[in-house]
Length: 260
Image (cartoon, rainbow, N blue to C red; front, side):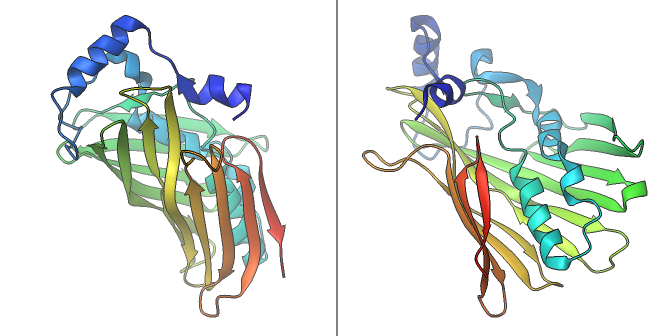
């Protein structure tokens, strides 16, 4: 792990916040749902989940005006991967929104077209955040929901990112891109350096064009591997033919290689 990655993705707590956190953890049981637990503010970022979702709307220009269906699919994958690096320094969790809370945003692009976003907390227990993004002039709609489920795992905590994001091009009827998220892990909460990792599998799928991207967000092992690694394949779902290979680090640089 480079010095820059260590400074951005890890956090060493002082004695007082570490003591507060250990006192809280002593009341937890392994596998316990953390959404009913009140967390100290030093582990929270100054945004709610409703605003955090906009990180994935940062680069819509990557998916606009692509005519070839395969290139368009690759562009959707690039767009999806482009938002993960946006995060606060250290190991932070967004605030849980209250029921009925909403967040609105508007973007103006270089060509003077615009996009609009609204998100709302539609359920508190279990927590569900729904969102809708639209750029009518660019024939683009992104909608979905996030249903995070947090669990205490001992020296780590996991947020299982259930829910789905869907991308529609209104000028291409029936073409829907369905995206499933990876899970988020906070390591080292009892001892060692606190580290945030993305882990497990994620998919991007377009049934109409018979394309799927299978992504693996790789967590670091005790003795092998590295932090923030990603590996994936874009392929024809019906035949399994591999078209592109994805490697690199989701926090830094990723490569999409044509292997046809």
